[in-house]
Image 1 (cartoon, rainbow, N blue to C red):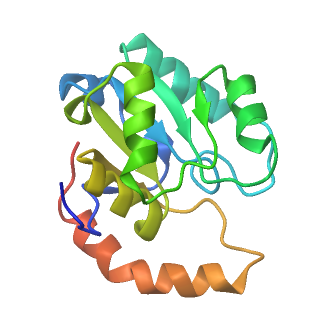
Image 2 (spheres, rainbow, N blue to C red):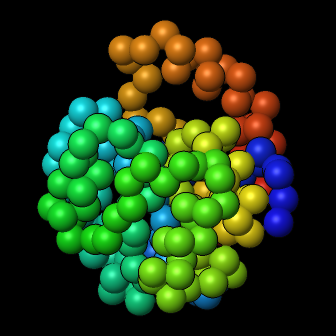
Length: 168
C-alpha cells in the first residue's frame, strides 16, 4: 500500500476506459466516484453514455460500484438506483476503510479492483492507500466553485505524471 498521489493513467472520461481491456487485466470490480466522474455536480440521472459503459462492464464480467463522498442526503443512493448498481455514500475517501468495505461487500480483492475518479487527493490517494489501481478521469465540469480550479491546478503535476503510466 502506498501514499502515492500518482494515478495509473489519465483518461478523458469513463467512456475511454475500455471494459474489455479491464477484463483482460483481471479486473472484476470498478469503484467509481460520482461527482464530476460519472455525472456533473447536481445532475441526478445517469447519462446514456454512462449507462452504456456500465452495460459494457457487465458484459465483460465486471461489476460497477458507486463509491461517493457525497454528503447530500440520498444523492448517491438515487443515482445508483437509477443506474442499477450498489453504492456507498459518505465513504470517507481518501481513508482506506471505505474502499475495503466496498470490496468486501462485492467479494473482490485489491488486485481485481480499480478506482475511477477525478480527484487526486481523494480518489487517487485513497485507491493507492487501499492497494487498488487508481484511474484518473478529467473532471466533467469545473464551473461554479473557484476552489475547484485551485485544487485542480495543484493536482496538475500528478495528472501529468499519471498520464505517462497508463494501466490500459
